[in-house]
Image (cartoon, rainbow, N blue to C red; front, side, top):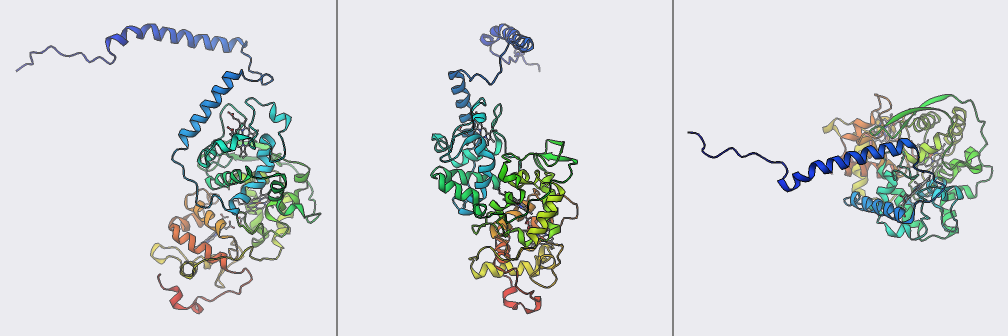
Length: 429
Ligand code: HEC
Ligand code: HEC
Ligand code: HEC
């Protein structure tokens, strides 16, 4: 039987709107062509020498703030956001990079920064108080389009961005002296501690911008590149490390920055080259490493690897956690096919110098690196790097425990034989 009703024509737009469609589309087309012609004519004045008209500048900033609020709404700061470790990790980088544009406590802004349009805000003004930590995270990680505000150069290093947010939170209550103390670190007392190294030859080399997962381009440039915020102090290249890693490589006791005296010369050279080519991502260390020549890298590696290997700080952890850490270090996770860390890194005598020493390293650093291996952000440099596969099978609790365990050991401790470790301590817990 056929349906007696006439077929209903499906209308996408109701009639009332349809009658406006053609005129609107025509107006849009004319407007678009007009905009292209205007741009082609070149009469638009995009010069930064005159500021944006007041209303337009306010509108742009309003749109930016709304965008930040919207995109950061589901971000949660890490538990240690107020810790000295994170604050100190962000401090020197702020001073060398961000303060060029945004100024610092007791110090105003550079006239070159003030000639940018839009102008970088003086963050010590009301600006920092206007944003939540999550909003600051979004701004620092992603930067601001159509402005000089850069994105974080290591796109996958959220942990570093949070360190910068932690520092911004602390900076808003600092005076000049407090700012100087935290940003100069050990370098304020270091006079001529490190040799000035020769500049060396300059060979062009490829450099990855973005990161392993967010790489957008590989460019060629001659190294060393100018680091952002290179200065007379940084030109004296050894001193450039001291603010963060100390004269002895042990960095600061709060533990946000690694103890590099624990590494061998070859390991330091390898890691600096990975940062220098952008293969190992770190918004902080990449800026440092691009400024170094191969000769300087070799000189600094020789210097730091010959410093005494001492833990930077005493570690507090409960015995259950340490026992779990010890079990993972010595036995690994046999149910998941993870070899004991000791077979490469030590605890037992099986350790080899080819692997970085973990004894006495800061727990926060160890934990963060294991997390980075686990998500594939670190370790993609050589197919044979065993760490991504090791970390991929570990839970947060296991990472925490093994990090605390290695951190609690002294780098000078003699190796332990697995058979000497009490079976009770190795039992599942
Ligand atoms: C080359 C200059 C430059 C550098 C370097 C720079 N910024 Fe910015 N930043 C800007 C500009 C320009 C803006 C303003 C964008 C706007 O208003 O649309 C901005 C905006 C900001 C804001 C928002 C301020 C507000 O009141 O809305 C924060 C926070 C910020 N930057 C933090 C940082 C941090 C942290 C660093 C270092 C990692 C940094 N910036 C490095 C130029 C810079
Ligand atoms: C602004 C602070 C800062 C400065 C300056 C700095 N570092 Fe670092 N360094 C760090 C941080 C933070 C890390 C950890 C980065 C990461 O998570 O990958 C690090 C990591 C390293 C590592 C890798 C450690 C490991 O266990 O794999 C080496 C090697 C190193 N730095 C050497 C140097 C040398 C040499 C200099 C001087 C030319 C220097 N750094 C200057 C902050 C700094
Ligand atoms: C087969 C040997 C091997 C095993 C097993 C192994 N590692 Fe590693 N580990 C390495 C190598 C090689 C590196 C250096 C990799 C690189 O440059 O990224 C490394 C690097 C690391 C680092 C970074 C150190 C630094 O200074 O940046 C940490 C942390 C680490 N391993 C922890 C562990 C833990 C915890 C375990 C056990 C669960 C473990 N490793 C098991 C070989 C191993």
